[in-house]
Image (cartoon, rainbow, N blue to C red):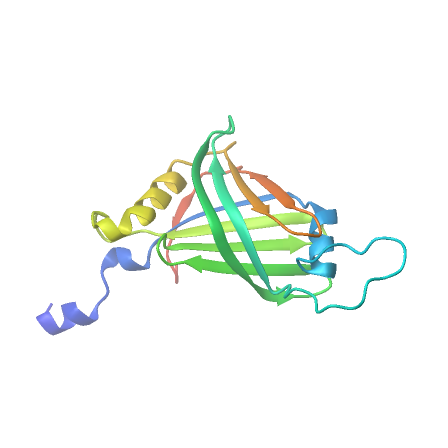
Length: 181
């Protein structure tokens, strides 16, 4: 292989991801309130308050935690931002990517099946993660690699219309995945 080809060919590990996913019963009241009222408070009985613009329901700020089966937190990611990717009457799909952690999050609220689906992908490096700027990446990769069945992915969203606390117990260990395979 020539030097020119080496420069253009990505490293073997640059397209690999560590993937973990789980499903749980959806915290339906809290999620429905968020869909209906955004981050604002739920209207109460009595005279309605003057109309105010609803908070943008197209974004979530949450805390993501990876916990072992005993509830000990291995990783906590506060302030993770997700954007609304797809919305129908049956489901909402939220996605986000945190560059420092190389962490992609996909969270689906399936109202039809009353389920919450979550998938996490962490980029697998071609070599060792040794640079100081990649501490969060290594921490995330190590925490995801350590997950096993029975551990949990926990998501907390603080909202004026009701907090959302969603736990997802893992039924399978993380797997390596590469696009095109």
